[in-house]
Length: 416
Image (cartoon, rainbow, N blue to C red; front, side, top):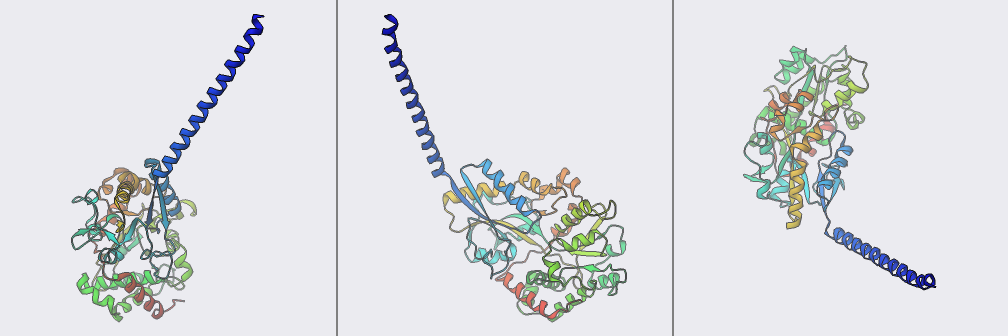
């Protein structure tokens, strides 16, 4: 009887316990939903337009997004890819018409972004310290003494050659280059210099102008009004190319094409940015019979001369800028991103690939980093040329260079 009397009591206990358990689960679920909703509502998006023309761009962008969001989970990072085409005003992916919170702005646009009110002056916590960045990078991130950008990358054209070629190393002028390379290359070892594309040709025209006229006040009038003497300089450079090269659109759009051929010894000298070294080293690592390709252990570099008066290096500076409409929350997020993106830790991770990307960081301390210098020994020599370079900017400079490049593309021969 006792057993029968106890059975209803046990049942009631079981039911109550089950109800309590359901209540606890329901409460926990509701709490989780509430927390998720709160977390979702407190998460904010930061839109950044980063400079896209770097080796392994997709891997780079993905890594930046993953690392930043892991550090700041309350910020969703949206990276705007302007690969097609950052410099082209007719493209929907043009930096000049893209709307973002943070822009990585090539200094060719510095004047237009700063004076046109596209961006705001840097907040105090981002203003660079003396000596923190290369001298040319400082020029390319300021306008009228005010900081509008935090320098990130610098770049400019160099002349690469084999380190055992002392004759090329002694070149100082365009006439020297003509004498050394010559216009007839029976051994198919002339000069590789990409001379297609409006922006590419416009930049070479500007380089020739600086070599001839030295500084921006004297150069600028020759950018706004086309100078046939500068065109003649570039025509002379073109004659140093092997037939079929340098003026080919397919080769122009094939990233690293001339670097890969140079790696195989198909040119005596090569014109390009420092990151072209990545393509040279990749070719040597993955496609050449062992020992048959040049590497950064037997490559040397000098300043590129495109006039008989010598070489005056010029550089472009990619700086991180904040949109004028960025409010207090946005500025906080933008500041966190810029500090992260331009930190030594992030930069080293970007540069220490295999082979190294050979992008030129604007941050001076990296050129004293033993691990980076060991992995990429040409950095110190590249720095000696780029840090003394001019960093031009001016009203609608990108448009002017592309206009001059279009004229050159029409006037220069096909080199067939």
